[in-house]
Image: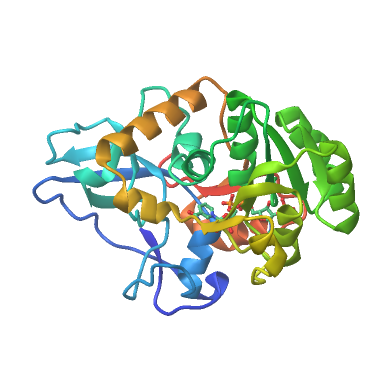
Length: 324
Ligand SMILES: NC(=O)c1ccc[n+]([C@@H]2O[C@H](COP(=O)([O-])OP(=O)(O)OC[C@H]3O[C@@H](n4cnc5c(N)ncnc54)[C@H](OP(=O)(O)O)[C@@H]3O)[C@@H](O)[C@H]2O)c1
């Protein structure tokens, strides 16, 4: 069984559950039973046809997930191994057959739900914190959409690195929760919140700004940045373009970047990719890194799963768990 779409459009209208036989693995391929796969914003964009990768149709979404090896013709894997996908996964399915080079063997005992979410959110946070600017000990990192999966990983990783985080959120009820997670400060993402953030930072400024919203929110981050700091856009939840005042580039020398994990996975050398996932998987197992789970669903329950994404009381990621 797999979820598929035959034309681009709204996920709730386009997804259908279809029956198919698992494909036997060819040379160097592995047949997986899919254990879990989250619904990420990128999956929704993928179905809408607005993502950086536009698939041939029909297509199965599920950019990340973890599975158990049922049959292997790749020397690195044996039946019973638990793995996560590094390439594009097509993981909203009960089974998938993939080339073994696109898989990463998970440490035994890792929680399959966290393992299913390891590829995208923790790694995006990790790469953005390490790939752009050198933040000094105790230095500030500012971000919007701080309650997102990526945002929460940024908070947890900065805590480990000894960097302080200024977090902008849409909803006041998130403040205590994110402080408990390790955030140094949390403010509402509006003009009053910006003033509050400046007061808390008391003349200090951020070396790195991580933007998943765009528009005025991205500009508020710029207003909290140090001269020469790096502003990195990795998401566009507000669907508004960046507006950058000329003076911020001319007099303040801000660097404006974009980040896309897919490009890193394509360009990084495999040993570096494996080292990164080993490190992050161990942090997950030690309980130092993780993404909260809102709800888990069988594939057939996809209308309810999609509805949870926009529910006001959503408390984390929504996942399909076909094999758990
Ligand atoms: N470039 C990359 O490689 C990469 C990798 C991973 C993720 N991303 C992007 O990063 C963003 C977050 O992804 P995720 O998986 O971490 O998300 P997520 O856990 O599903 O959370 C989505 C977040 O977006 C916020 N949000 C939703 N609509 C918004 C709006 N109109 N204005 C402002 N905020 C809004 C939500 O706020 P509430 O907390 O208030 O609900 C929530 O914090 C997405 O844009 C995703 O595509 C990019």
